[in-house]
Image (cartoon, rainbow, N blue to C red; front, side):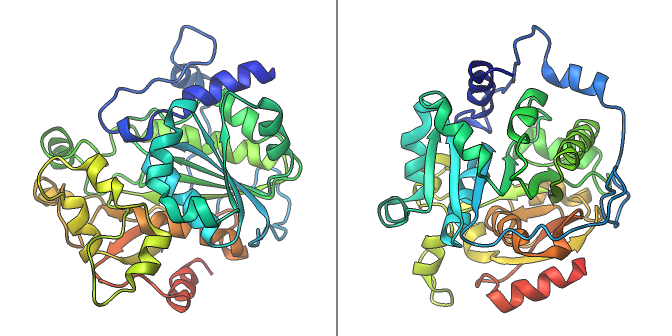
Length: 360
């Protein structure tokens, strides 16, 4: 792939973050057919075995692929979760860079907040268009890539983009945000809630596309000797720091969540339910494998619910889990799901260690 073609692919990838839930998104790669169609024709392999490690197609034994703070990490994707993952990675001490489309720099900076952009040199925004040489230089020195794509329409990532991103022998690990694909407690009620209450409900309507996407990323990572971690989400909610809270250190929350402008961007009423969710549900639960259920028969009532419910994933929780998984050998070549737990205080470092013990 030429640099110019790669730039075109990445610009298509980096869809406006504030429009991910309402704008129909399509990726193109120089052909007249939707890339997912060609993707599915070329990839017929491989569903993950529920609850087990992801198989290495080469049969090689697993070597340490720990990526430590100070190493270079790239964040590529679209939507609010990708912005939050970049912020979390930078705050955790990774030398972080994020691809952005030129017209979206202002809104991304709003979501990141003034503080991190002014006092943190570990987060770099790299234009998808203006400096292709810089982009290639960063890729050649990157130890881990986080692929983080919001949206539930099955339009995930063009195969050409995967080929371009996973192309360096410096790469040790790829961490991918995917979805719960086991189909449990999906069906009619989940689909109805998506249509009538919340378009971001994960209803399992494009499971095959996610399976093909996962298989492609795993194969590509394996070809370059990198490990692959699949982190599964349900309906993603929240992502900022909520209101003033006596039980949680609000300054710490501001540092590790999206800025409060997130609520202004997403709200559809005087008080956004996303803020109430962030106040009530700061806890996290992890489960190894693809085992977490959907919302079930109560989906219509929980679609914008602000308490702990089956089928939900907190945006702050999954961003943090993706970044923290980089430091763990036990998270290499496995898949795990992220669920919610009602708590007004987010997990401590010690509690995260306990949460990740399910992978051992």
